[in-house]
Length: 271
Image (cartoon, rainbow, N blue to C red; front, side, top):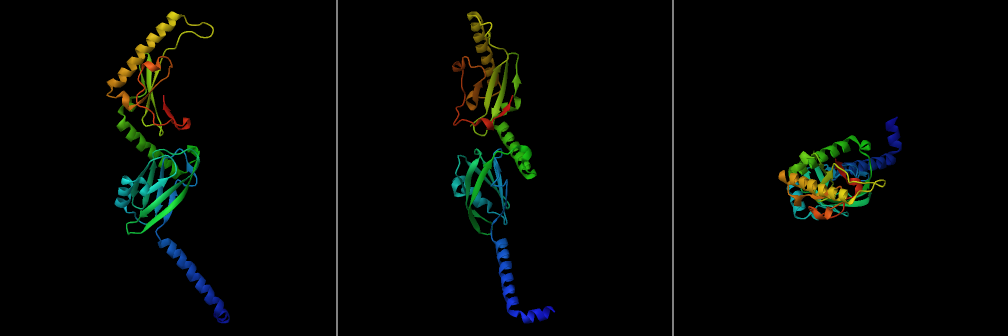
């Protein structure tokens, strides 16, 4: 019966055979061609809390070529249209991008330039980069794993560069030293807070003598806090210094300057 159908419809069968060969050839070519297989997190649904992206290819990448070019000029490998440096690491078929600063929610792009495979093939591709505010609980398992691993690396690098952070918060009788670390600031912020309160309130205003005594205490214990920081081998110039009480701030060092302001929703307090 099949043979009879083929005999009577030989032309149709030949056409179908040609179409099938073309379709199979296309899929074989696409599979063989050097290309991106997947991206984690999804570049079109990227969580703003993350700072890394893993782009996987179907072939091993040319590690030395890609990383050396990235060190000399980041834009020769990856360009972005938001304010951030990008660290490039190659691991087998994986291209890992670490953003110094993840942008706020919005639509951006990532331009991959001449990504080379170990066999000499190369690809350039512009990716849409749609950043969204997504809670940690709503991340996929793969995204959570990537987030947790990245935070661990950041913490280790930060603690190695700023060892005093491993001793914070530090609490004395009259003051507390804590810290805040954000991706947007050039260094951690050391926060000095007094454990006593200014005298007076709306019902019972402070007398001049009480106010003077309070300011003297503030000077004394704020100085003690700074001395403790220095006693831990830390330089005040390496940190941004923040004083919780607004009085007398101009009398004390501000530490390292901020290159730009940190968005409020990226702060991670360790108080």
